[in-house]
Length: 265
Image (cartoon, rainbow, N blue to C red; front, side, top):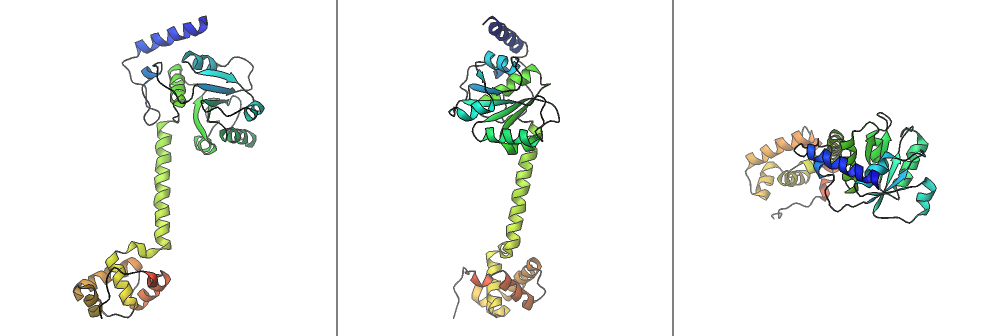
């Protein structure tokens, strides 16, 4: 109790000294360090510590100082206990490499039952992308400063991810790039989606053998406008003439396209 009171007093003095300074933003929406000791509701209020070390963990001391309870568990105990929605696993990476299969497998299995973050990780021992893929909610390195540790605990206990901002931005960029590639792939599989409705109408009529004047009559546009649309259609479909456009329309399943005009007699 005395140690806990001393830690509280130290952290309070630390926060008063730096109250006017904003902590570096590490994750999207991360508050400054002055909020670490404020009384707010947390999503997780218990850390289940998995560590090979028998000595008391700094994680437990610091977490207790901000009213997060801790308990030490081994892997077997984790898989035999009831799932606690208010608890998350703090997994020690001291002396471990996430690239080792047995470590990655253990982390992945734990992540399937509990939210998990990694602590005591040496720089270079964990690939953040691999950690995210395994379901890890954050990485705390062994050389983190005290204010960063407290911020990490606060962020994680609120259910947020704790990763460097540059990494989150990179992941979002990758996600957007992947989505664009999927869209382009979809357009390649269904190339007619690149054409406008009017262009699809024209292709449909041309595929039925209609000449420019007949197309113009059916769509209530001028023959000149039909020529303009055809130029655009040839460019988009890479067809050089009506024969190639007919072949393209057959490959693209245009025959099943339902035009948005009424065919005139």
